[in-house]
Image (tube, rainbow, N blue to C red; front, side, top):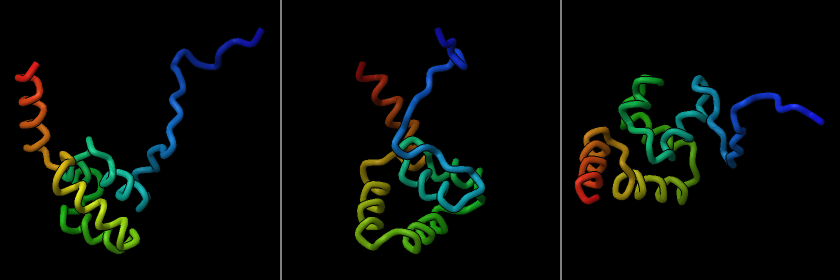
Length: 93
């Protein structure tokens, strides 16, 4: 009988997190709903406008429009909005 290699469960995801020093990490983080622009700035040093420019350059036009709509409306890409919506959802419970 084989023993387990580790006590931690292995979570398989379709798009795992790329290394933080790669340009792919910026795209991955920008698409992630729970990573704010402030956190992206801490890791990469890029402002929100620089992240938007990077996304515009790296994505197809239709993909950029989808991301921009998502990042500016339904997503919580700013720290203040994230805290406000989290506190609001807690008050509703």
